[in-house]
Length: 230
Image (cartoon, rainbow, N blue to C red; front, side, top):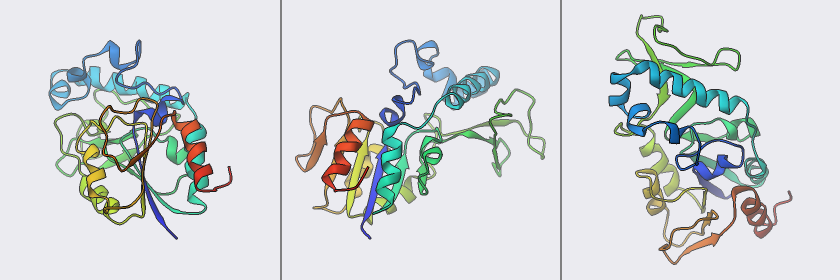
């Protein structure tokens, strides 16, 4: 069975109503990124950071996978599909995808600020975290998110996975956020590379095949190319 790595970004979840960095009026517009998505912001005002991610979880719990997410599940029926996502939502898992690697953390998890950084699952009925909420060892809990300025623990695994594939599909990302954007350079020379996004960069390597549509429509067209039933 052929192996496909699918790299997904914010555009993948935008059709489900998940705010991106650039959304007008979205959650990110109301906050400076430095205040809610950096280690410095956490040290300055952890209560603000915790509240911000509580809001994001609330938004996620009101959202559902879109047709693009569902199409990836259909693709998995005929191919060995590994999703590498820059998104922190769990919409891929909700849709039914079975192999998802989160580069930037997971919104529905928190982790201890202890040296061992234990990770804990949140639930729909208990999704908020506040100052004073601690792990069993007595350390404050923080969002299980890779903030700007922090290392990306899963990047080496993502690089290894990308080296092994027969096809690379990129959905809903500007290819400008590193180190994730660098993953395309790890793919074997000559394999098919597709980019599905309505706003494609002006300069792209010539071997990348562009489907200039949103995630849902783009994935439908991509499945038709592969003769996968929808």
